[in-house]
Image (cartoon, rainbow, N blue to C red; front, side, top):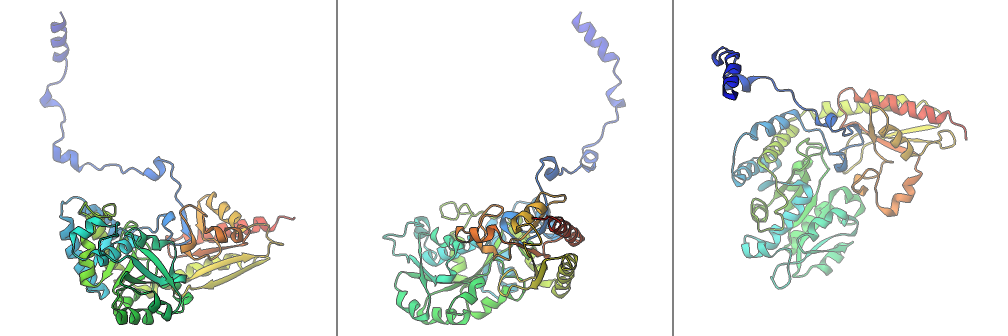
Length: 429
């Protein structure tokens, strides 16, 4: 009975040939609705008026970079071959002997020093970060004012950092253990030894020199300025003004050191930098970002930033108790930057409170805190060095930049800041 019922049911169905079947090609060509995971998962997105901070996800990648990542994801390639070809192209663009795409500027620092320590000796590569008894050097020298938290990248190799203040200090501290003389560009004005003097010292003493310029474009000329100056290694982030992948950076410099750094880098699995993977999509995306950045209309872009900053300043500078100032940082994050401060007898608000009102308003906006140099920030929203946290707690000012704003967002930022300042200004206390 069961068999007869099944056959009867089948006879009532239309013939297979009569069904409107789609071919595989037709199925693949159907438009697929793209998922918006930011909305789907309830992740907060915001207008970025603060700058290219890592904890704020850096930058919005250039559309051509995104297309490059998508297109290259459909191909298999040998990572070393991609690095060979892209590295040679990047080196030409930045006036370096050689270059490679790293997993950010921090990774470039670790890899560059590792290359100096090991050379092309695979046995030494396998031994890092254990330096005792290997014959490898173990010290990096930098000026006291240049020894900030990102130098932890050097500690990862097993080296320690020696602080100096004068040229005489350098000569005194140099020994057979000295692997590198390191310079931090954003702190150049805080040290007693300047760029050219640092390079000259390295040449005199026969020790490689490096410079960290992680966030120091614009100006675009910084991409080759320090290679031309004679630094042996230059480290830069890719996911800031260049609008490349946030997880990418560039290590550039002398050919022999870059070759050794490559030996310490993925895809090799026996190195301290195995976790510093950069896939083919990021390598090629970084190249496209660099190429586009160098060929961009920087004068036009600068004028657009000035226009946006002027619009935001204009929305608040006439309010009671408000003071505004537009300045351009000299060494890093070199873009028009607006500081808005106020008389707390008139505006009953702290800088942190204003940031929170903007952050949790609609739309959400992130502003900078008090003109504080970006390298002071730790991971997390408002976490800073403990030594200055107390000072910032009641600071009655915020900082606003325009270089990460998308078209039209300057008007929104201007409107929201004005609203919040007006609201706080009406309070009596």
